[in-house]
Length: 250
Ligand code: IPE
Ligand code: IPE
Ligand code: MG
Image (cartoon, rainbow, N blue to C red; front, side, top):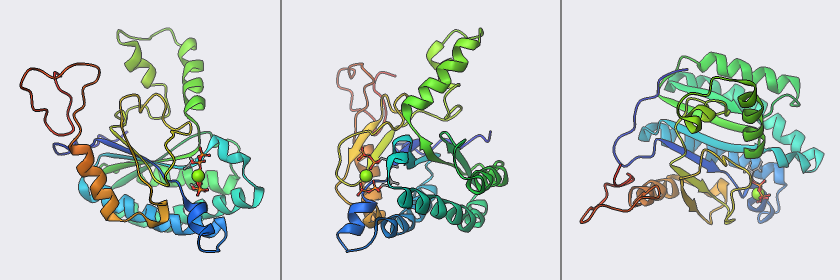
């Protein structure tokens, strides 16, 4: 797995986004939910470019949850068609920008053409090291912890730091914990996203529906993150003005 460069001071190493609000964006315009997802893809392309240009090392995008299987069949099928065409269309730019693509989630029940595209794109970008773009498809935080636990109990070599060792069994093995978790679309919940990995993430909830998100919201998110004092359960040292986005007392 490629070694992703450390980001500049005050910039999160790992940004994760719950890209929510496509359906409501479409409904407000009298469009179908699937048209909302198509509009969401534009915002996704922009966000990938934005975070890559900022120098963020890892960007994880929630595109389809394990619970989204419960949506109407037409919507699920339209989403899968969109994923297939998006992977094909975006691959050249990812290669050009040096972005490694990695999918997390249970892909076993995806249509075979989608599975094939996912694997091809992972192979085609595996050597890239400017940013790791993680796309969560068929992903659930509980699924991830459970699949890790199953392999964990079967393995006798757990090392001196069990939490670090367990992280190595999660689908995000080798990636840093989430520093900044953004959810668009106005809901204040985590919806079974990166439950283990976001244990100490800064949580930013914004009202804007995902298709309307532009660089302005993304820049504001990074500025807000840089103003946070991360304490990780500790207390700031006396007179300590914490460096932006950094733990105190570390
Ligand atoms: C998020 O947008 C995209 C997916 C879950 C695939 P939604 O489709 O959940 O949009 P809303 O929340 O219904 O507006
Ligand atoms: C979370 O959004 C999943 C994705 C963005 C892919 P949902 O729209 O599925 O979440 P809930 O149902 O509002 O919690
Ligand atoms: Mg939603």
